[in-house]
Image 1 (cartoon, rainbow, N blue to C red):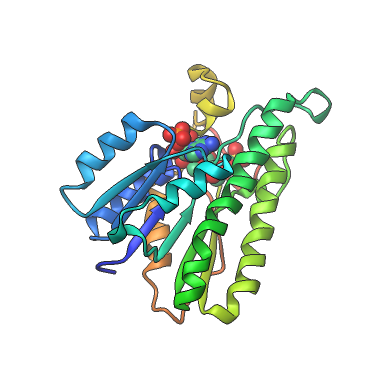
Image 2 (tube, rainbow, N blue to C red; image 1 turned 60 degrees about the horizontal axis):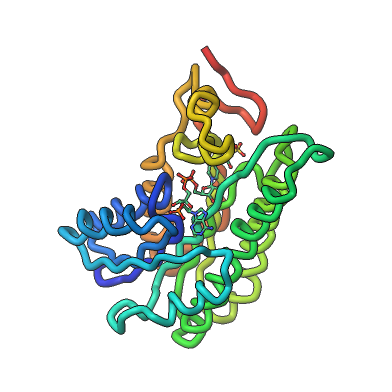
Length: 251
Ligand code: NDP
Ligand code: 8X3
């Protein structure tokens, strides 16, 4: 995997950050993206000890910002071999009739449109080279709808559909496309969903061993390091204590 360049959205936290760390340990060149500039700077300082790193600060839901940021990449980072479409979050957890429409907009704009904008900006160069790899981070919420999950689930169903669509449209261009759909991973995800309520967020992971971001990073690394003729289409990954979106074996 030496000298490959990976572009990771949502690298400032959770799954994206753990993936950046593992990729850096394996000498993959990194383009790390997120909105929080201080975290990007910290990561760059730490991971530059291991590999070449550049950062891009932009909001994936801002179409112009996405295209301007990617166009601004220094020459040595312009050729992107691996795109990890990871940025995303749930905002709120309420019945459809009570839903906060700003939350709905955020989830659709970030999880769906953001993934599309970033992909649209990067895919043409992969098509031109007849080579590339896209890993889309979906969710169990894209496979199963659970109570009050409504719009987050819809956004991840869209990611599931787009993953399939990308594989179909990019098939003749020799581009690999994979999705990973995790169950409960202990990250900042629940803190974002519950708007900074740390206690409520902590309770989500109480009484069982949740997946850790490093568990998903390991799987992403495995997926992208298969021989080029091997494409892992779709993986669902649960903590052992979780049977589906709603059944959790808590102590
Ligand atoms: P975190 O909240 O820890 O990380 C989310 C990342 O996304 C952050 O780096 C954040 O960076 C970035 N992000 C969010 N909004 C934007 C935006 N508008 N523009 C650019 N970057 C953005 O959560 P996870 O690591 O858990 O989430 C990563 C992915 O995994 C998401 O797609 C999530 O839906 C999915 N997932 C998570 C599961 C879980 O249980 N945790 C389970 C299944 C899927 P910043 O704020 O700096 O912009
Ligand atoms: C995150 C997992 O079950 O909270 O996508 O939707 S869940």
